[in-house]
Length: 483
Image (cartoon, rainbow, N blue to C red; front, side):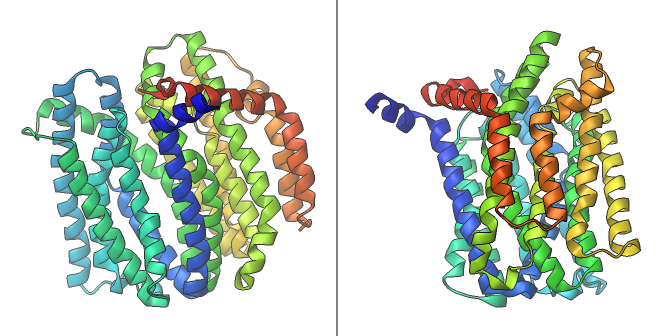
């Protein structure tokens, strides 16, 4: 037991993941606190602010994505790494100028974005935070590939801690201002820490580095932007078509449901560079084995946590009576967010094999489909706001099938349509998922999800046991997931 405790204390992977879980716990309570302090209207305002920041975060030339891939492939070449990071920073100086010019032009022309949400009051704080976040993302990728986690822990702790501190000093509109100011200060301190602690000595931008960053980055940009815009476009439809309070309920549901993914983002964040490196060198048999291990160890616990959330949510929401009507919205949202996890593994493989163009095409098609379905649900069928997320659920499902099909064709492994569906969504996951979806449509009481949770554990007992063994390996040997 003492040896195990020492391994845990010395294991920076375990400490990193623990710190992320602590921050996710704080973020979860922040969501609850802010829901009370802001109320439906101001939480809608906060939702719109986050929507704009997420849109700006996607305007990145694809540089952080290509930088991550190129650093992973060239991790042994220090001079190449410095050149790549220097060129990336130069490109981001250009990007910052474009962002400032864009919003400055709107200000001079008197064009107001998000008038319904009084966004004009917060626009410049949001822009500065977004630009600082862009620069920090480059250093985050640099430190991640070099397996230096303490600096990353500091940056990733800034937003939840800023929100928690602000909560004790203000409410309503003042709380939004305070959170933004704290976030800006935190992002500035993180950038200073990154620059000082990296001992980074920038070199002149090199065409040898800029060219691959942009060539690979442009398609990764389209892919990542379109993929993230799938969910953002759904939120945009709700924000523009439905009343502010409905968007507030939608935002609150999304924030809670997204906690499921946040719990596992730390693992995905750590293993992504190694995944790219392994796929880049693997044989056909090794690739299939890596995909199976990755998807089992990633997807199974996400589904498990989702059913636990669905089971306890009705009890949690009793403390927030003004949001008592959002269980169905939360349920649909949670099940949609889980579909997001299905992409894991296949997208990494296609990226490692240089198929960014194909990924960008698939994500663009899915984005177009999602917007079309969301508009049909909102404007043609005129269904309640909680049903709009079903457009994203269906879009993710189709995207997953396309992703798996393209991956197996590239692996040169013939697979039938039936097996493709089985690999993408095995029966052990599909059966509990399908039953849960039916229960949500029929407004079945909470206790029905206790049966779903038991069924899931029975069907996935072998996989859960294997995941426990994997966690034990990581505790004893963190190098398992080093790049």
